Image (tube, rainbow, N blue to C red; front, side):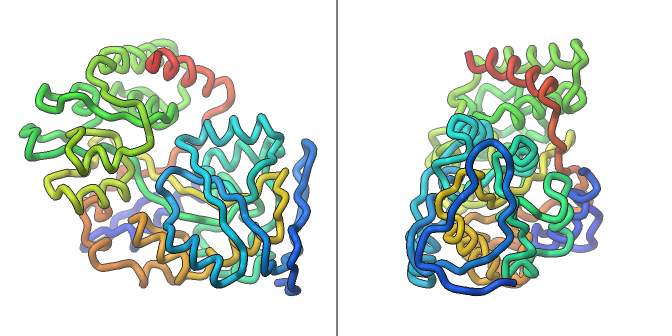
Length: 375
């Protein structure tokens, strides 16, 4: 998802080149006051008619601390629709919830790139065709034919960023530059934080041990298992929630973290450093989707269309500290965000790349490793 850019490399500028790698790896009208009907059953349905809703509700399921309260209020003011927000802490938690309910219970959910592909392939997402939305043209060209949803039939872009780790340089004097350093932390780091995310954790362990993603090689899988086993006594939390707060208040001095969360933590604790590991980092993209069992489809589409307005998406960009695949948001990014070392990649660093999903059989190996690590 990256290419060489002369001068400062900012995530806003990265938008065009980043989406290109995702590609490689890989309007109606009317007004409605009633809830739109959702799909049901096990087969993915197609719903490309856009009917603007002016009342009702959207039951929204997203990552923890990942949607500004300002937008919840503004959406109600602009559209008359109530946004009810609930939270999950991993793609796997979201997947389990949708499978257990056959895609019912929520109207909009926020899976990451690979999970969009999994959920769509298994008939758990509505095919609504983003280009049928009035603001569908605001999706940047490079964010349309992404590997996980070519043509954006099942999703619209939300935010994207990177996953690495950060540490407090006031406490840890060593210069940490790699995933090997993360999994072999200095004593001064104390108890380290790690995400409750099997894909991120196992892939990072494979990076540290020189393995390949989605490998079925027994020796590579064992090496990843071994480094996690050795790391476990140094772990303070296995939790994707509250990472920002634990680093910002000094409860932890080192943790795996998303770059936007690291930027926000650094506002309270400037001694934090976001690391660009020599083995590379994951470049991910989160997306808005409509589950097949959604009860408020017109309201859900109205929400997705509203979030494709650059001034609305820019609120999330500047609050969450990530970039977006929506046209016009780069220009609305704050100077503070553009100049952040958590958002600005080092000159010449070209190791932030998207990671294609593993097959079910390959993921079963990840699950075994991760559950052993957590246990």
